[in-house]
Length: 234
Image (cartoon, rainbow, N blue to C red; front, side):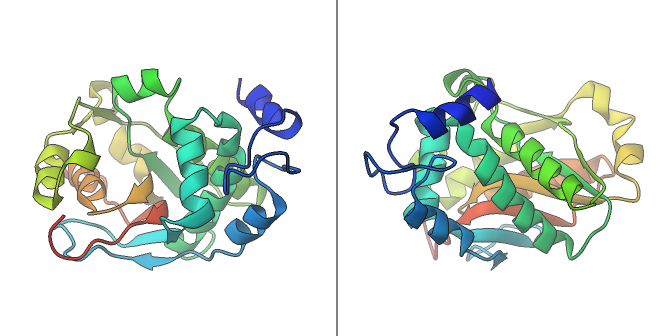
């Protein structure tokens, strides 16, 4: 399915995922101009203000704007699954920056709710994590991807302010029973990095980090594709 979706992006007359231009040559789902804009982005540290307690150091590829924002929306909301390949490659760059250099790394994608998985025909972040891991392994990094967490149903974060996001996130995640015993040993000797697509208030990343810490898994950093920094309330 993933390969076919990627191929479809190449050969079908789809619009550019970055600028939504039509009838333009596409590669990996975007036009040459948007591809140049995306590849010009460089990972950098980001931190919401105020930052929630327990938020690990966070690195983002760029702001949630322009071609990056549109590509993420096309991937998540408009069924452009083939974008997992280029976006996963970009996420690999963020992971490399967050890890601080080649070393054994374990990627933990923030889990999607069952409703989100059904609506998007799969877990969009798991796909990104797997493609990011492949890119890093090709560069010689020892990288693994684990899915030790489950996500409970929660309100749409777009409808919540900072306090509401924090309250919803605090109750949103738990560790799978099967993972409880072996998780600390699996993570031993590896740099654990939590993955998400977008950071806004940081509540989700802080909550996931807290759950993992409680079961003996220290999180060194978080890596995201886009950062939306809000100041004050909201």
